[in-house]
Image (cartoon, rainbow, N blue to C red):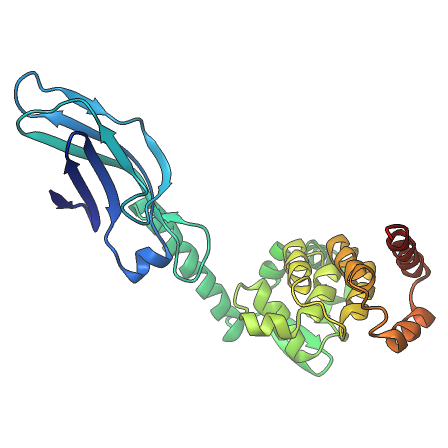
Length: 296
């Protein structure tokens, strides 16, 4: 016996034991983003003394196939019976990733509101809607909004709250960033940055995040820089890890150089690095080398 439950299927198999299964309709959507359900399920005999069996509440159960929820009922049931499923919540993840959210009206309304607000914020930047501050990069300018910048960065907030030159002239000079990197920085602040743009400018974004105290951007850059360490960039990343206090990146670079033996593959570059590197970094490298030698 099968019943369609809002694109969910209820299957009943009756042999010596009655098995009740709940699973989603098979589709590309449910295959890649299976629903996460919270529900109560009951079996009620419709004749006689109306025996009622209730399964304990299921919370945040991922339903991907017909084996994910199986309820075996050994109590004999005679005649007709009714199976009731009361969904307490049903969550799905968006196709572009992110945390699963409820499909109920409250969750959908909040999600739609957030998406619309973020799109509008990005439009304010891209179309220069009522901008009130001019950002001067090294080779160009961008119009922005004091309130948005102050909400995202305590440094900008302090800058606009005191009698500083930027407050008087309605400009902020960021001469250490190109216009492309500066645009990526403000795209991130306004929630409108693209992944390729982020990857292209992540070192400049790291510098800006540290300078303007935007911790979430700094952490995003930190995590991204961990993903593709190689012989061409390891020394630069080690220097940045020390400069911006990124412990995981520093440890990963040290491990790549010492434990993986890559120091020997970039001997000339490493010797040049030692000539200008911070003394603290050099000390840490040699401590790592000595520790590695003790392991042999």
